[in-house]
Length: 136
Image (cartoon, rainbow, N blue to C red; front, side):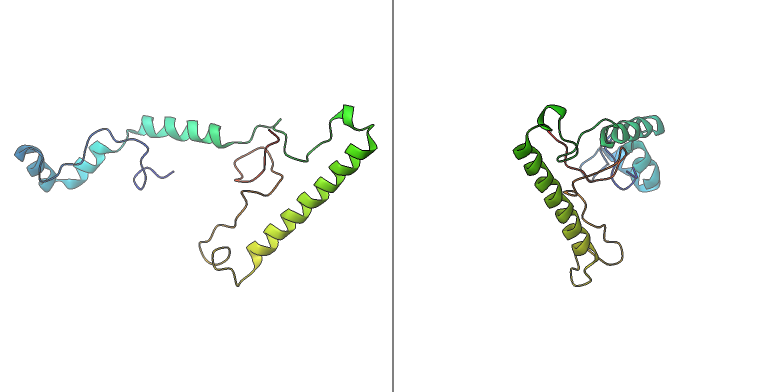
């Protein structure tokens, strides 16, 4: 994220009225310096951003619910039929989510600055998408 708005770590506490007199006077003279001392360094911010990016990405070999039928189940007609029903229902679910996201009556799903809901959309591609239900 954008570190001045939401830093993941602070290096020092912001001075308050309860701080030492010298520290508080320094804060009153140049408050921006006190703020910059609290925020993470550029290196710390870069490291946290890199780690968050890596942890947020979907793996290229991640498997999703209903994604692919295991080879040893393909010969079982009952299991194959159930799997195809599951896939059909998952596609319906994705359609329902898309319809809700485009419904102008749902103010929490559409409008300026509103991010569409995607968390339970069943399928995703390998990157940061905010969607996809892993097959676990």
